[in-house]
Length: 291
Image (cartoon, rainbow, N blue to C red):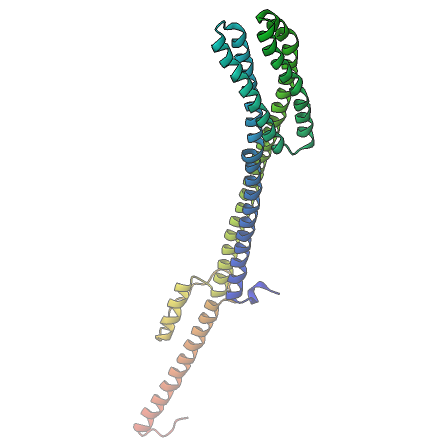
């Protein structure tokens, strides 16, 4: 079908329909990418980061246990040493609670394996701390220090190594989630830019094509064509009509042809009227020979 045969209203509907379709596509993709980005952000904020915090909390509690255990061995005041021992026991209980919370958060197979290893290293470590406290009470500080620097220290290092591995795994998971979120942003930004440029190009191209076809059909700007039509309607058959080069099909071309036809008709009518007037004048003068 020739595009020139399509109605103006249909052309406009097609043009605006294409632009609106691109807009719908852009909005749909934007919502989809935003949903993906939001899911990635939720994974960081609600899942990975809390696990990192919980694992770090275990590390902090462990450091507090070590510090208070050291103080209990260094302080000669029994009352103050007993307070440090109470702190050790409290922090050990908090470590159990914190580990239970971390266990509830861990979902991946790798994470669960690391957590199980961490949990397996806790009972002997906690038992060695209890033994240090007993040795201090029953056998004296020297025996407790000797046990702590040998057995407890090794068990503590094993526990901390496993805890570091757990923190590293969760930190790595959080970093991967961040990278995925950044990649989603980059991809969505690029797609939106491309689609935006395509929509802009289609809009500009469609507007140019429709206006070009309309101007070709009219033969000029609508205001100019309307002005010419008004002057012809007022009887100005001498009005100049400027046509684009090679135009033989536009409305303005048809109007110029109409103007020329009307001018010929008027000219012929005036010629006939002049002949009638001349004949009437001759008859009035008594000249009956009108041959």
